[in-house]
Length: 252
Image 1 (cartoon, one colour):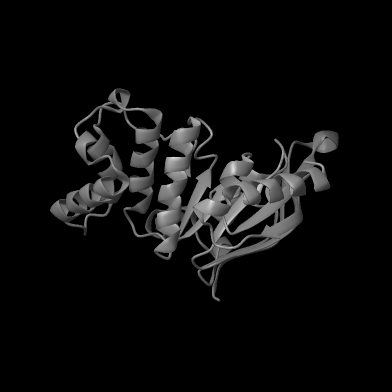
Image 2 (tube, rainbow, N blue to C red):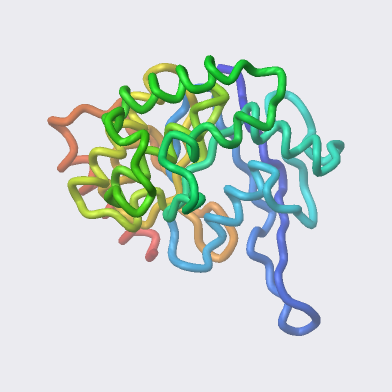
């Protein structure tokens, strides 16, 4: 299977002098096309930093990130931004939306930067995605007039506008109640089943148990890995038990 991302010997440090410490310590990771991966670990373990490094959102001090066959270090920041906008999608714990725009306009805003795209086609695609995730009736609502789960669905729509090869999610369900979190995971599962790779940073075993592979981080290193079968609703309890047991086993 083709590797969409390869991170080799990744090093990232914060601080200066005697207070300098490695957040990423010679990390090696590979993500396949169409794979569904979770990164787990305690606060400060480096899981979000790893995601930012693999997506080119954050500079690294050492090592190499290859995305879709290309070394990200050779690109200037503007070119990296174009790659992220056209080939990657991002969903964060708190979606960043503009208060003066309605839901539909927030979804299409990044796509409007490409003058070669037809505005009507952009709007049509956004409406199709909104219907797919169950928020079609909310397009004219202000961002203060929808729930957290609905706003997160809008964030997912925005991330999908460019048909990305991979979706990165940094605690995308962290601010949601249990029902909304599972609804969002259903959407990620659907996205993944259509061929888009998904990488999620999470502290929640219930969320990680929905993925196919889990990387466990501690002190800047990937200390363990777990591979799961494709998710089916009937085996979720068993999967959660396996993830929880592995967390206890490695002491995180």
